[in-house]
Length: 421
Ligand SMILES: *Cc1c(COP(=O)(O)O)cnc(C)c1O
Image (cartoon, rainbow, N blue to C red; front, top):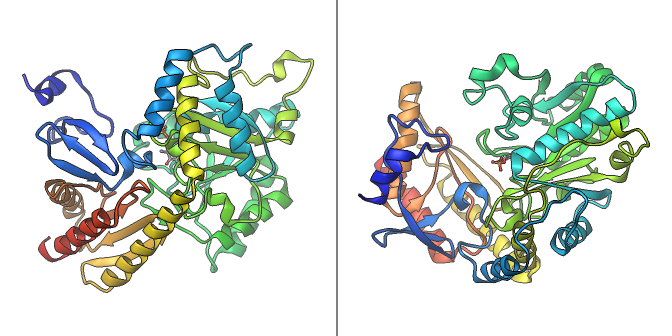
């Protein structure tokens, strides 16, 4: 039996309608920005394997560090015990995050990093004896698939089966010049019951690579600060260079109270979640009263192997060549966007840093809409490119090591698709 036949017998894939999905592509190895299937066919990973990969696949330096760690210590309980990797990673990350970030809490992935952040905010107010239980979030937000993370995400097809069970959240529009004043007064009206404001800074990934300007986020954050509302910056997707700066929050002057990381944290090697917070948040949990403890932890909290992958990825991230690669991709994207923006099939293009999104013209019918997504996905797959459209939105966010030739090939196939589809 082939790998795909065996897969179809036993596997249930994520975000996949198993009845109608085409068989999965069996990947056997990766190198640089590329993946290779059983028959040796090459695929350029233009979506960084669901946005996690930043330095390329099977990076030899990360592999070496992980392998060394595996032979030393694979795991240890993180309550009552500690280890070098977890401490060093926290020390080094806190040094490059906004200056108010002082403490690091580890978890498993992006969703759990968000769960921890939300629980920190809710219990912060609980510990202070104030009744603040409502959350504030943006429409079309995406913060993960576990229940708390899903609750602070926009209501959509993803959440429909659970809507009645999700806790109460106020959703506001993304800020722009026309609505910033009314958003501020909306927030002021809600403030007495608001536990926190959670947001994806500058780019809403799953929502369709929706982008908004740093200066309006800065204004909203300053307003929340003034009104005493805690802020969670979910940098699970935007962290580690995606927006052109190390973190999306580097584009604003205000600093969030809490930040969430995962995806690029280990260079996309393995799962690890991280929630950082200010001294002020941390202090609200210090007490002789045991009930003020943050009762949260996962079996694999701060797994030493995952921490070693993150440390190796950080070494590579801080190397000058990575910053140069990010600039190179930004420029290439900008030039390509200029070239295609007036094509009749292109509704809009938008770019933040290394993320380029293009909205395809769909006409009106929604059934055509969904078939267009599948058509485009298959078209690029056949051409040896992994582009996974969100509806009619195609986006490119490659590993930073992608070569100019690989980028040029992706662009040329998009231009070809604009003519042929
Ligand atoms: C992907 C994502 C998450 C969830 O991370 P997982 O590791 O998939 O659980 C949370 N927030 C944002 C902004 C994301 O893009």
